Length: 327
Image (cartoon, rainbow, N blue to C red):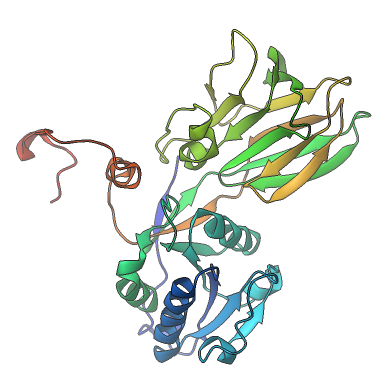
């Protein structure tokens, strides 16, 4: 189950009176409006006496001529950028958040997302609340919630370890042949469950249940739940329904030796090759992602807002009978 703990003491406390504070900014720089929003965040942090570093995609447009970013130390996607950092601050959509979370996970740091994209389900707040979010970061006025992650190990046809990885959202086993199916066998806790031809198999966390797994027909899981979600993707089989298994279970997917090559993709950008006859084993990881929370908005409200779900006509319980009513 996810757990929540408070942020460190405020900057005025004696514990932090002489600490050098550093925030790593991970912006999406594909649009000029995103660059200016990130520059605004950096400027607010600098004005508060907080050092700012920037992690940018090496293929992105150069920020060297920007009046704010030209003053900041810039890194690629490298864990060295996190040295001495207190928080990873992501400004962008879900893809940018996952890249920022990768850095935060590697360094055991909290990560905060501000949405500059479309749905932005992983972001805590949207761009119109940017200034207030930065104020909360400066004051260390936030809580940190642990979000479950999963780890994966790929074994080759001769049982050799071919690669490892982890995911906050999902591990996607995908066929590399778009004109043919992947012949796969699904296993849970060391026992075979079903075999099918498919485009792939998604193994997701509750956090990832609103992402790729949702698009493939999986259920939405509340993030407070610890569970592993398995969703066959376009499977040709009578039994190809999503499964929700214990977080203590191991999920494995084997590819038949005569099938097409595949790959395991973690959170959309970390990849491990899976030749025919290989196997991937997925478990709950020991290390969670430290997810920064700025409010206590229920997940149901976020679901309705992000997916624009129709709730007209809802009356709801009376305040006296509603255990979730605001005090």
